[in-house]
Image (cartoon, helix red, strand yellow):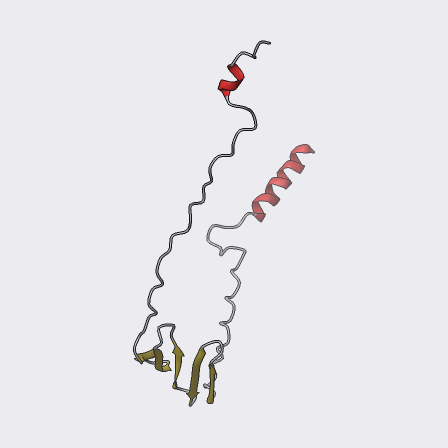
Length: 143
């Protein structure tokens, strides 16, 4: 009886084994669809602002406009040396960002202040709280 059960199990195992010429029992999943492309046309816009504050010394401006394809504009800023830096630019998908930088005015710098070195930071050592060593070694006066 044991031989019959063993032979039946062996026959079932052989029948379940894949055949060498058959395709594999698994399949790769289909690749995911490509992400959607949202290529929206550019939106036309135009803006400008300027700041001129004599109290703080801030003086700058920016203006920009676009027709949806090409963006152009300029910005300016008062530099610490007294000159005004002006950047005029255009930007699009074919040429990228193209800028031209110019300066107005003459650079001026304040005269350097005379140098006065600070007083020394060290001090004379404090006097000792005890008497001098010579006075301590002197014999006491006899009466």
